[in-house]
Image (cartoon, rainbow, N blue to C red; front, side, top):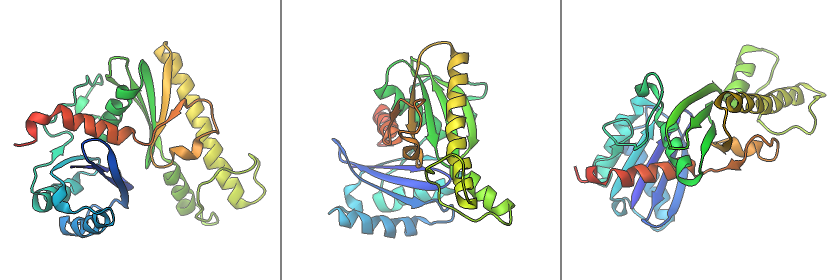
Length: 259
């Protein structure tokens, strides 16, 4: 069984693949100081709820945008799974061209998403990943990562409003009934929600105009589902984009698994 770990700045996803299907997925808050032992205790309990144990996992792949966490995640695989993990960015063959000025600067999460999207959707693509940051990634028809846009994420914007303005409360993001708010909370919710819809629609239109060819737009990430039905600029919502990409990378690098 494969343990796939996808770590963002806010959340970390652990997913188990049994060779045929994804059988379990769990999320935990990202904590760069969490040790391999702490991960093992947490993971052992969740696996037990599915009738599994750490010994059932015989492979591990890690994608992380938090460099200081990779040491502990690697130790989790080595110490408790007795395997050497594949770590995106460390001599792992992604199998796609990276057509940006400095390929080494491309985030692991964005490259994994590019692979996961290209596997399922034909043609030129825009992948919108809504997490700590909101990224707009352009994927060419041949699967190449062509670059894109990075904007602050929804929750980051809410946090900034609360921390920088003494009179503005901390609120949960949700779709307001109307654009024009009648109190502080609904004003903030409208600004963030409809502001991000406008951001998505505006950037998608500009990317398409600059690209000059038809493109399919895929939404993914922790808060992407919030925008479903609110805009026609996103053609598909795909929560499994990242783990699909990780599985493909694992299979492409089968020659490294036993090293």
